[in-house]
Length: 410
Length: 167
Image 1 (cartoon, rainbow over the protein chains, first blue to last red):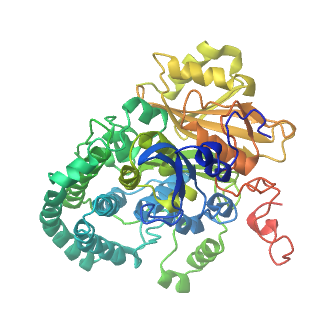
Image 2: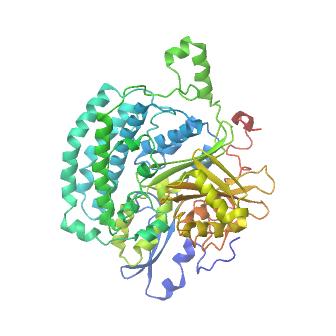
């Protein structure tokens, strides 16, 4: 099939056992599949001369779950839980991105209040995502405290998810057309106290690492990438911005009323691990700003759009109203009318441009659904970023790229 | 800034007969081009000073078993940040020879996306540096996202495609 291959090896195992390893001074080592540094399951075979990495080969797909195939047999409502399991550090962004894709296909008009509620939730998810990634860089540079410290704040975000949807990690948050209920009084109390206490706690944690001599020495100049190469490899999100390119889907292709908010897109200079860390830290501050603006200017109105074909009716209506009963039955059985069409919708996920390419042929399931999974695309740049670096640099470069196995393997 | 209509007009000027069909839906321009010229067209879109489609968003394949001679579509999503406009390019390939030129030399990031399309659909990308399976295991001898592979166990009688809106 692939006859014109010019490589010296055909498979990872051949790379592993190739001639220069057996005869020369080059050692071959495995980083993964299960290794504390991978934070998931994927393999890196490194060829090292002393401690210097000469070349590397990546194997992915260990937790491939055939999401794109599964989606072809599922009614549209039932696809939301699949999206949870892509980037599980910020699953609300995946869920809401999928709802917005469906709303684009159905051309539903969404109340402003729903947009603002979504912005609050997505920015909370972005904070949770960046907190994990940045604290893990601390672990890999030897500072375990920096990992435990922000988990208290992350826990508060998870409690906010619980108030909205009852779940914490795989959230399945919201519905096509809005939310199942408005923000509860407990949510308001918790969000207010989060907005009050978080900046201080975050500042303390930030000051632990930001100007820490050991941390800076370990991360500056580690795993750098130039803006040209970053673009060529299709990097998005904080990794691209750390290289100095100010592309953010929230600004370039605004969705969910992001154009209403005033925020800064932080960019780095060198595209190294320190810049990636710094960009994420600044994005957390900007996310807090966005939440404050959205929460302060919350419009009045409904928490759901008028899409009876997709949005489950009130339980009281189901028992007392024939129309509602029919809709309830149709939605639960997945018998919805969907127009034929092709939609591409993307949102700014925790680690880059998360896209949904949906082809509908009018049936009750998608004809084809493809996810643009940012880390699957930008992980290709990893070998180039670590060549010439040491093994310990490879470890922190990997964690600073925020590669999430669930998203990588779909 | 460039809107979809203006973009289409520019593309028609540039590529004339290479544009087989076009449509604008959901605020995105879709253009079908011949498979033989896809590499040339993307190279030109990337280089062109005014258009500058410098970012490859996504490559994916689609299987249409019921359209003879056009069984596979390979779909390219490109983004021009200069004009803030997205473009979808499509090529159709026959089942007998599902091959198209690779664009890894233009966008190194296309490498894994093309490998994924090969892995799941069996689309061959000519001149690809390393066309191997990526998410599935190497010993697999079929292409699982093709429509002939049903998701459910084929021996089940309580569920069939009619229940899923297809006959």
